[in-house]
Length: 196
Image (cartoon, rainbow, N blue to C red; front, side, top):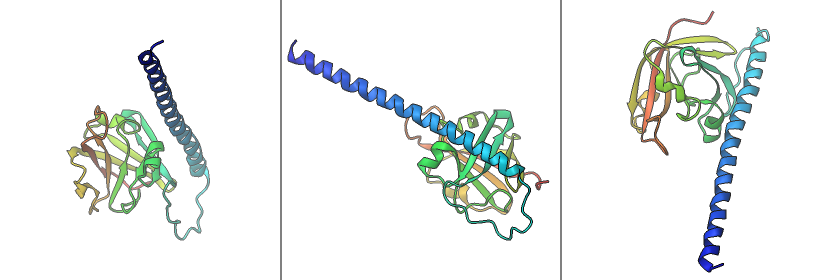
């Protein structure tokens, strides 16, 4: 066997090993996200079934990774747990709530971020008038989509507080782009009613 043949064979084994590692990691990420969603969905449903405590004076401060509730977009078939924070680890497992923005039920702009190639993939089909429901332990909050837009990553205007009760969803754009996408897809929705 010649030197070039042995080198080609070793190179093929290296690429095969790298490919198997990449597939293994991708499978781990998918399984981890599904397991996290299932566990947190079960905990969320149990917490909502418990009677509310009457003597709660102040809710504890949220820490990155704490589940807040779930987002549902019925027309798109989307139901995902929302967690506090927007780190890579959080966004791999859930939709993230950006710190410093309003929480569901508070006046202002609730800002949620998610990956376009996982949980927020269905947003490519969202349109004005679609209903979005944020369910928390403190109530359900319904929003109606008013608009969508594509902005540059440096356009932080969408994160600013608003005088109205708003919901802003952020994901990368274009949806079919491979690699780090150059733009951001923004969904703006307004709250329609107070929780029952």
